[in-house]
Image: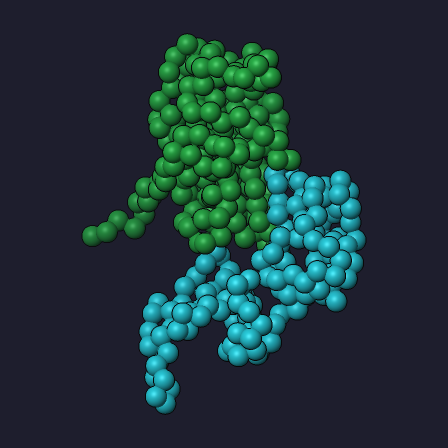
Length: 184
Length: 138
């Protein structure tokens, strides 16, 4: 008999290059793609953060967006803050590093940015679609001159390589658990 | 769901699917029509068309009239980060009118129906409260 309570597997769609995983996720969400579908790109050519600030996304980093289930706006806000905490916790557990959460949406290590979160909603009278984009500088070996004083990576800080897939799955699992907790 | 209905000598291929949370897409012989699910419960409901449907199709379509909005209110408190429309412009359901940065997120505000912009009540970088009128439509 089919077990109806079993959590469906995360659907992960991989791309070599995207302009932005959030833009792709928004597009798919509007076309009715299932919640918890994850869009991953090996690199982004037009990655952005809040107020459309550019997010450098060379190959090696972990760049993904999650289509979130329909939730009320307060829960989405809480989840966005929790996502920074989840990223910091995941880094701490997998590396011997001490990340710092720069509210609202950034994760820093040793005074430099290592990750960021951008939730984008489309709202009419109610929330129509929500996507959460997360960018983590994991295996980025070097940043351009203009960023090297403000950005860092797990590779630079720990010397270790990151299994992007493993980190991705850990973060998604925790996001699902947290949203379930806060929306009940 | 897909089905065929024969009326007189004409066969209509009909396909209904849910897109997003609140919208139903109904395809009749490859022409697409969109409905707000909340309105289907009301008598005399109205539908809306996607951007790529031309006026002639609208007039000949199965939907008797457009859904017209009088004003667009802010669904949350936040700061206007960009305005995507101009006075005099006609907007359609689902079209982005502005972006609000609020509650640590970027929020694209979209129109729920058709209308022509009469007045934009806010400016970029202005703080707006939940329920404030953003746009007045003709």
